[in-house]
Image (cartoon, rainbow, N blue to C red):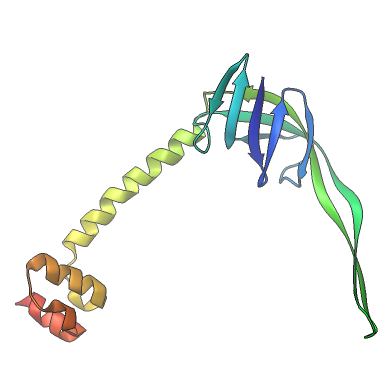
Length: 167
């Protein structure tokens, strides 16, 4: 069984008990981390592909250590100008070990989907109940004028739109 999972902005093909070096993760050494953004899961020949991620699939891993990669030398030079800059960089990595791959059973993804539906309904009600035209923008006033059947609203200024809507 293997999975393709996004970890710290990069996609990795992982299997159980595999050690992977990823960009530095928040968390102490020895702590467990869960990755919800699973793109693909293969289990005994059955391949499940997400669009873009599989809902409910998770990969659990344990942070083994935090370390730094090899030094990379950045050398800049402009010939005949006397310009030379030398700079070094060592990338911070975390070594993780994959403990389990679950194709379903995660609850975090379901909570994320339910939250936007609840927020969408009150916003629509607030727009319908608003009749304070002075706080609205010109574009909003033009939409309200169109809904009320006022003709020639496209060339009206804000004050004229408010006057036409309050009649």
